[in-house]
Amino acid sequence: MRNRTPSVSIIALSILLASAIHSHADDKPPNILYIMADDHAAHAISAYGSKINQTPNLDRIAKEGMRFNNCFVTNSICTPSRATIITGKYSHMNGVPVFNHIDGTQPMLQKYLHSAGYYTGMLGKWHLGSQPGSLPTSFDYWNVLPGQGVYHDPVFIDKNGKTKHAGYCTDIITDMAIGFLDNRPKDKPFFLMCHHKAPHRPWEPREDKIKKWENVQVPEPETFNDEKSNYATRSDAAREATMRVDRDLNATDLKRKPPEGLSPTELKKWKYQRYMRDYLACVESIDDSVGKLLDYLDKNGLAENTIVIYTSDQGFFLGDHDWFDKRFMYEESLRMPFLVRWPGKIRAGSVSDGMILNVDFAPTLMDAASLPTPADMQGRSFLPILKGESLKDWRTSMYYRYYHYPMHHKVQPHYGVRTADYKLIYFNKIDQWELFDLKKDPHELHNLYNDPAHVETVKKLKEEMYRLKRELKDEDQFQDKLPKDDV
Image (cartoon, rainbow, N blue to C red; front, side, top):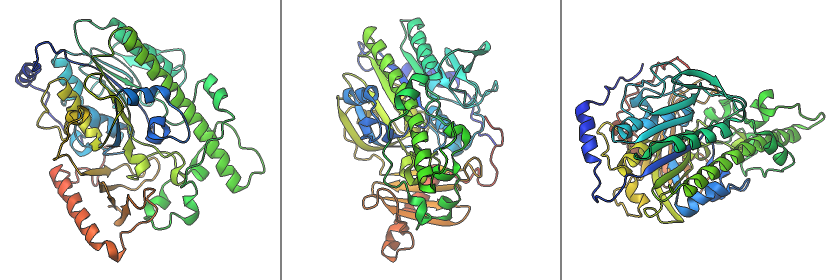
């Protein structure tokens, strides 16, 4: 079930190496520090207006660089997103639509950068397979968690095998990143992927963070009680999904028994507080880690020529619509945080509303390193946007597709299109549609698909969705059969 793509040829690599020569002889290729959390929602970052926490170190990247308000994932689940990020291809083209192992022989971002002279590293959550053919390739140094990994005293895998490390996972990955930077060859630019496990479920904070957050009252989202209307105008997919705060959080998530005698409403509120305190405490450790890495770059004279990116592999529901997890094409799950700093190239404090996708990350970083976008990559470089240039032909719509059913939360397979104003979603297995007016209804509460006033809008959006589907060569490769090998 995997799409087999040939390895990059020697000739192709030679062409790429030749193209790596910068237009100005005195320019140096930029270092790249790519920091990615797992399941960190943009609305849990204060630079994005969070009402529930503060993230001063992440805010520093936004203050000193650019914040993207409309960064979206093309398949909102961990493994597929990671495969898309390093291949520049949608799930149906890179062979990773669900939790299957990646085919490590296909071209990937790190292979191009490594061949262009970059010293490359991959640390933390890889989550693309722990078998020889799916472990990291073309990284000069890698040390990764097997599968999801654990928060406390985690095992890591490197070229020598498995080793258990004492301590908290976020801190260990941070120390490994600093070690990589300390020991790198100083005559090469570096590309480091620093991937945190946090704040993935089951949200296990460090002990000092638990104490700090144990009495904090986290505000509830506006849509916290959507389940009371049985999700009103939504499709059956919303009612079937098993990711509700009031019903589906388990004993491992909650970590303690609820007080006795609570009413259903009180119990739901209690579960939400337990969930969010742990989640935000994990996020705080991530923010601390980012601060340490930024300080390291400053102290070692690396800040000026280093692109620093902070993102997550997708969005996440933080009690929105009474949900946790992701998967759906709804905004909280679809939207990724994307903060980037590059002194002298990106204007400090800038904000972009341009629509970028995780499929664009690889082409953009290659462009920053003066490498062309390979013909088989489906994303597009947004480097001109980073530099403040106006692009009249930039995308105005995006295509999304989710496959993973029924595991683990019974979210129905679906695909759809999003524009600046509307979102059309098709739950293809149950033949049901949803249409939302994103300007008038940003919380996506009112499905307008059967509204006679929106017949023409539906027609145009369907035309655009199927145009994108054809353009991206989505020929339902995984419609009836999905890979079963689980990471």
